[in-house]
Length: 286
Image (cartoon, rainbow, N blue to C red; front, side):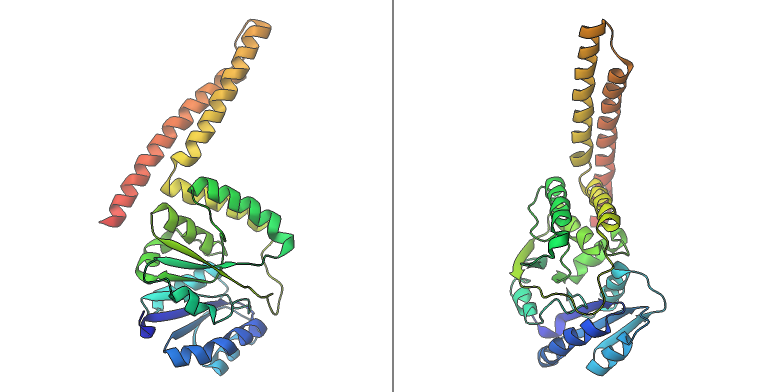
């Protein structure tokens, strides 16, 4: 891959300490390789912009805080490279890992740095979300929301309209690539502890949002994966409850009949959603 075709995008919000460490290790390598480095300052109130200027990276500033995903969208739209590398600004990612990602980008559409270490307090929540994502996508995902990855710009730009402005950008783009049949490679990489301020991600609040996001993305690309299991569950529950009512009380209970009717409605809603999804994909390819 031609080095001049590589753009590195780092979203940053009040990350002066972590960003200083990240850029300190990245900029010498980027200068030697001829990589473009873009830091998107998402309305920081600390010295993040000053750190970027001191380190010599390109700076794009949002006047107000818009979110992690919005910052990535800004960086991707202005990036000059054919391949974009996204990195976190908290110092977790070692710049040497970029070369490991780029080794595979000629054969893959997205290469993800799968973290070997996880923060223990978040491990159960991440595990649960990963299990849901694995089931709905039909693919085992080693690291659902890694913020260190190499992506082909022309492909990722076609998905920006469905990506959220919040922290779940990486989750969405992962599921979108997998469901649309793009080639995704996971490369195990070490991740350091974050530097500076504490993460703003909250397990219950953001975990719930991520769960809904996973459902939403899968419904966009493969709605039957959501509607059919729900329909079958209601059908089985309705039939069993109806049989129990007939055997025990000599009549079909209203709840059982309602569950069966709901399962039929969900089934046809799934068929309709699947057709809409197919039409949307055809228009996207035109």
